[in-house]
Each structure stands twice: as structure tokens, then as C-alpha cells.
Picture: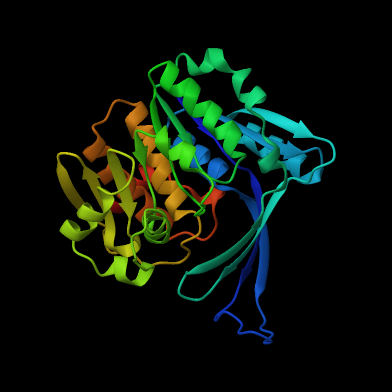
Length: 306
């Protein structure tokens, strides 16, 4: 049993050959679809056969209604908390010709998700093997999820995204944290380490491992984009290289990685094996444009990478 507590956002996407500079107007193509780190991760796990429960908040508006219909169509079990006077979360996403993105999010209802709503599902937590949270939902609600997860012996994962300085309580409750390069940089800076994202990208596995040991979590998984990922634990370090792909859109790649990781862990896979599969899943995802609705299935991943 897997529980994902997190965000739902409606993604408003503009695709353009090149990001506009300050004061510049460029022509692009617009589309929209479902997203949010929590929802993306839950859909990724669902498409891999994990059957998670997704707990999140919505505004009682057209975007919220659409989210509920979409979850039903995907057979994703959800425990929604609805708010009358708050909008459903939404994100403005720019994607350039290389597949890189820039994102601005209004978390809206996600920040209203209550600890009481989480506690109302305590019976479900009692059978959970894995609990996953991120930083897009109300930190108090995410903390309640981790408290319940630890109470019932679940493996607790925190995806510290987007980077934040007000979620130290979540890190203290995590068995595993899964930052990307910029989030890893932010976490290190909070410990007083003078590093930059650019410098992180050029460090060796051994150097990254030593830095990861400074964080308040025994197991740190750093996603490194096209380089792959690094697994740092008290017993050592392992780097898993990503396969070569043609990048179309990096939006949701980290969410795909996290969703695949927890799906494998909930199924009883070893951490190293789960990491290797998650790298393949994320690599498959970046060859597809979009977020939640382009998360790959196991057949997709097997067909692409064997």
C-alpha cells in the first residue's frame, strides 16, 4: 500500500523555441493539462501498477471538478479536501526547444490541506508500506502524514521540491529524501555549506556523497538530470547513469522518478533496484511532452530500455 500526500495543479503550458528575455515578446503554442508534484507522482505510481491513495486539496471550482473526473478516469484513488473560497492550484510552465522548463506555481488550495483531513485517514496509513510527501502542500498536513507513516512502520520519503527553508520538520521525519541538484544545493546552504547548483553538477560521486552526509537523513537520493542519480547512505555511495535519450520535455521527470521509486519500494524491491528502475522511468518520460498524462507504463519502459 502506497500513500502520496501532495499537490494538484492545473498546468498552463507555453512552448517556444527560445525563452523570452525581459521586455521581449515571443510567439508560442499553448496547452493545458493536469499536474502538481503530488498528482504527477501518484499517476506515475498508478500507471506502474502500485494503486496508491492520493490525498490532496482542491478548490470547489471548474479546475477542481476536472481534477476529480480525471482521477476517476485514471482509476486513481483520491481523498480530496474541497474548499469553497480557494482556487485549485495552477502552474505557468514555459518549455523551450531543448525541452528545458521554467515554472511559476500558485499553490492555492494545496496550502490549505489540513492535518485533520490527513488524520481522518489514519486507518489507511495503518496498512501503508510507503508514504511520500513533497513541499507543495501545507507543511503541517505533510508532517501529519509522516507522523502517521512512522507510527505504523511505513517507509517515509520526502521529495524536498520546490526548494524551501520552512520544512525542516519534514526532513527530520524522513527515512529517504530525494532532492534534485538545485534542491540539494538549497539543503546544503541551510547547513552553512557554501555551494552552488553549477558546482554540484561538476562534482564526483565521492564529493557528492560527502556533502550528502551533512544532511539530517541517512539516505539521500540526488537526481542529476541527464547524468542519472546518486544514492548516498551510511554504508556507501552508488551512482546510476541514465540511458541516452532524445529530450523533448523535462516537465514532470523528477515526479516520474519519485513515483516509480515509491511504486517499486512499495512492491518490496531493494532500494538500489528501485533507483535503477526509476532512472529508466524518468528517462522514458523526458521523451514525451506533458506531465501527468504522459507518465509511462511498465510496458512503455520495457519497450524503450528492455
